[in-house]
Image (cartoon, rainbow, N blue to C red):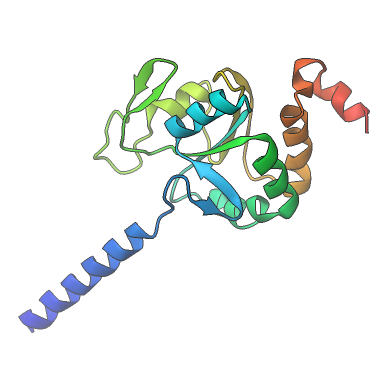
Length: 179
């Protein structure tokens, strides 16, 4: 009986390790969009002079997974983001320090379950919810943010407004009235 229990615990532990390793690796393509880690993505945005979309998510967020499985797999979204943005995935519960604009942000309680990293709060002006999409210019200055699940047809106009640079010369209302 004791041997069986040890076997089962060992088996479950091994399965857990395998599942943990299947989490997306920064820089890998998921659903057609090439997602970067925060620091790497910001360096690339500065180099390429492209705006940034940051997908702030958590592993337990159902709406975040729905975005990944639906909206971020929509071919119109994939094509537009790939050509006009640097896409960054930012786990709001990341355990590692992250540099942003010459300051280092940390998770204040990295060993706790569901402890929020400081950076998503700073980027979202402490209005964090999941998912949150933060749009930055290539220098790291916040353009705007949105929160919650968005269908592709709802997200694409905002991506076009920011990705085309129209946000620099006209209001969102004027942009929408051009249609």
